[in-house]
Image (cartoon, rainbow, N blue to C red; front, side):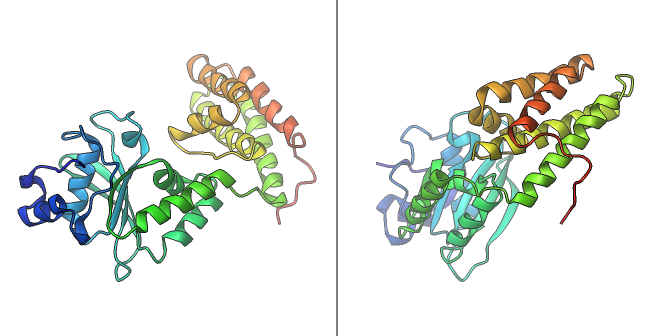
Length: 270
């Protein structure tokens, strides 16, 4: 039997509906049995409080993978009736930040397709790998099936103009990093960040793999290319700790060698 949050947390009438498994309040079968005070129950309470008309909900991100800390935010995908509107909200619930990815069953398919195009696939990972909380009419299950299929296909490939621009940008960042003295730590650190991000973007694209931002950048990078990814991250850390740019520059050059080499003169932005 799926876990039922405390009555006081979600309202008595809503509790009775969920407990009975009646049409508009059926919990997803995989909601964990032993999560009374965990992130899944917390996310479900959020949904039932704020969106009592929700037809589907899923918990994604670190919380769904058991990697969240007590202060980690909740990433929650929510499906609302087609009469509602899609949007992205950040709220605070019970003292914890929550990022809400809100869609309707009518537009979730297009949203998932679009998410494949940005190469980060945040929404795809939430739906494909997240923890289902609520699925009233099968809309969540259909969205998850589509998300898994798109995730397997991988991100859309970069267009030729995107490859050229990426090569040019990485070359510029790398050259500026070489020219910046270690005494100018502000500029050096900013350039190291840009060099790492652009190199990661190109390296993951070279492997047809997903990229990421924030904490997901090193995770996706290491997943796509453990050896070169580690070299880039180690080089970036060396700049941060020692002001030594040589290792990061060499790692960036390795990435450029994979995709046609540095690009300086002759570049045309189209």
